[in-house]
Image (cartoon, rainbow, N blue to C red; front, top):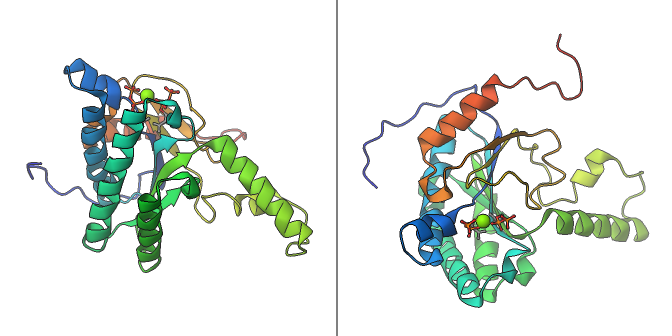
Amino acid sequence: MANDRKKPERRSDVPKHIAIILDGNGRWAKKRGLPRTAGHAVGSENFRKIALYCRDIGVDYLTVYAFSTENWKRPQDEVKTIMRLLNRYLHEAIDTMERDRMKMKVFGDVSGLPESLQTLVAQTNEISRRYEGFQANICLNYGGRAELVQAAQRYAEAYAAGEVTQPLTEETFSDYLYSAGIPDPDLLIRPGGEQRISNFLLWQCAYAEFYFTDVLWPDFSPEELEKAIAVYQSRDRRFGGVKA
Ligand code: IPE
Ligand code: IPE
Ligand code: MG
């Protein structure tokens, strides 16, 4: 990547938490007569570029949807390639996290991932514990409904064991989600032209602003992110109230 951009400035007017559904890799490749997996390779590189840009402009959290609980339905070859790319990505991330000043967490059912990936996830989580600052959350083998069910199960177990005695509230329930302790996304971006949530952050996006674009994820640049942020800034967030 040519380093022709001026380093962006940290701003106070950006969303604290941005969530992105990384969609459109397959169509990006198809348009170029390439196998779908080529789109996944370019898409995974784009993640780092956008994450670093978010960090630089002062976003606190970026949560990306990289592999859903439903994506296992895809042809075995494609799934294998995605797992290989994730392996490579996490390896590189472990090497560069310190330099990049980027914490990384994985949201999802890690036990369903190949063992080599599970080890890398554990390592990234461990390294992240040592840093403060910008945090990227990568959703792998993640499904919003599965997250809610496992949170309910974990709460029920804690309750049965006498570890919690207070009644369940929205706040205490949030503590059982992968996103425990992290504010809800302010802005949810879906590149790739589809206008649906595809089982992503169902609880956390209760009041997120949605931004859809036809741009495919591998083409989603910092300029596209700025467009989304500008639209976000023009929205009137009322949270069910009325304008003062
Ligand atoms: C998103 O791109 C990546 C994953 C879901 C793993 P897609 O692979 O869904 O790309 P399209 O939607 O088929 O173009
Ligand atoms: C959503 O994209 C999941 C991820 C980006 C990881 P999909 O391509 O799987 O979603 P659908 O099939 O269009 O709803
Ligand atoms: Mg898709």
